[in-house]
Amino acid sequence: MDALAFLRREHESVLGMFEVLDGAPRGTGAQQSGLATMVENLVIAESQHEAIEEQLFWPAVRDALDDGDELADHAISQEEAGKKLLQQLADGAPGEAEYHAALDEFIKAGREHIAYEQDVVWPRLSAAVSDERLEKLGHELEAAKKMAATRPHPDTPSSSAVQKTVGVAAAVVDHVRDAVSGRDRQNPPDPPTS
Image (cartoon, rainbow, N blue to C red; front, side, top):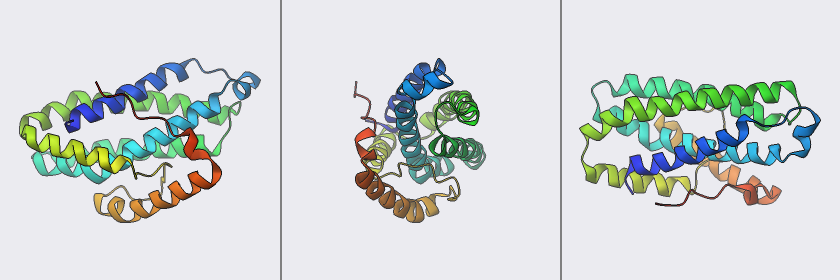
């Protein structure tokens, strides 16, 4: 599967989560609604997604496009802001005003980020690189996701080099913590291939 098809599948899964979370109950109903599990799945999915983009996708954009640095820097700044919101969600609980504010803000920012990638970056990258390169990148992204961080790590720098070293180490710790705590059973399944 090529990189853009892989990322589109990821985006569709996240957008589906957003649709469900848009009408999430608040107050005492939020604590009994399963919202915590749904948001935990969002945190896991988005943490993995952003980690592999920072490791592999944004470096490819930088290399392929004359203004790739500018495009990647803009997207990564969006992702860094998103990681802070994801951390607030990971640290909070349904029913807390700050939790719901962070969720609302993340959903809004997430939709804007996805639109930026799909409408601005992808068409340019697709025109600049070969189908073979997109296919290779897609396989790399898919393989990297299996071992990607499952937590946001907002204080870890987003550069590709850091993500390929410190980010990988953090991912190993995440996976161990997830196995010990049972959180790995909440890891959302990958979207079906079409």
